[in-house]
Image (tube, rainbow, N blue to C red; front, side):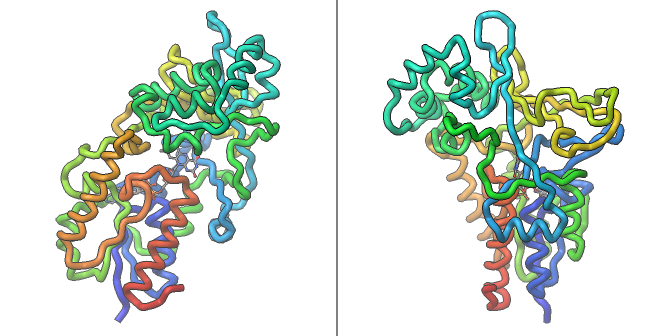
Length: 378
Ligand SMILES: Cc1cc2nc3c(=O)[nH]c(=O)nc-3n(C[C@H](O)[C@H](O)[C@H](O)COP(=O)(O)OP(=O)(O)OC[C@H]3O[C@@H](n4cnc5c(N)ncnc54)[C@H](O)[C@@H]3O)c2cc1C
């Protein structure tokens, strides 16, 4: 008899797990809380303009298996993502558009350069420090830290950089000296012309999916007679009926439609523009039309406001207490069920992961489930 697996959540991680399990001969049922599949990567349209209500989602990877995999579902349109920052260099309100990450060759043109240069010369050989501020100051000096990072971080996290772990700094902060302007250094970078929805729908096209159903722990307990295993990509505090115990930093995007005079016209200087200064309550603007290249008589610009009640960024406190709490939740879920349960994706693991890493998690999770249920390890 075919083994049956229930997958909770139809974002990238649930979709890929379901597809791989289906390909491995498992009978899969996917349950999704939202009205549509796609999770956080979903795009919407406003007056015919594709935009991203959950923030910019650029697909990038250096994993050839992941690049091949998404190519099978139509995600292969090349894109090069370059980010800008609107920076206040003086005491007045004037803004200067610079590259993010900061580029030495651009900085050398600024009146502030002699100060920056002196600070860079005094830096330690390698950046170090347990908290985010100490680490980044040791990477770029106080002037660049204050211009690009200090206030952006305070806005983004709602707490000063001194209270945050430096663990995520090496991935997020760089000072460039090589003229490389793209944000990511991955081998492949793609952006779908119509947004990510049709790609994830394609991944799920052979799976049985029920949308509009939120699955909680008691539902899993009740479903044990029907399924041989569960894959959970949902947040565990909510699954356990203890919504909100696990702290996340959320963002809210305020999106507005702007008419344009020519179909190729955009309104902001780049797909993503950072606004580090505290004078602006938002952290960045997102204009997806730069990435889709849509020819349409309008555009949508979204301002990203931090501090929304949404599960977006796990809070990296120095003591890592929320990661520890999430591990205890996993034990609680396991001990409430007689069937094996696997945790996959960003929410169930309390992680920030990019889409390619969510796909890698789907690969790894499906391999583990197949191994446990059928003895296959391919
Ligand atoms: C602001 C922001 C910007 C980002 N930008 C990028 C980027 O540029 N590039 C990139 O590669 N990645 C980006 N990411 C990361 C990307 O969003 C994630 O990698 C991806 O969403 C992970 O997929 P997932 O399936 O793990 O989670 P999700 O996409 O969140 O999917 C989880 C799904 O589970 C459903 N669900 C939750 N609880 C239940 C329940 N109890 N019952 C049933 N269903 C449930 C949800 O509705 C959702 O559909 C960004 C993330 C954030 C927060």
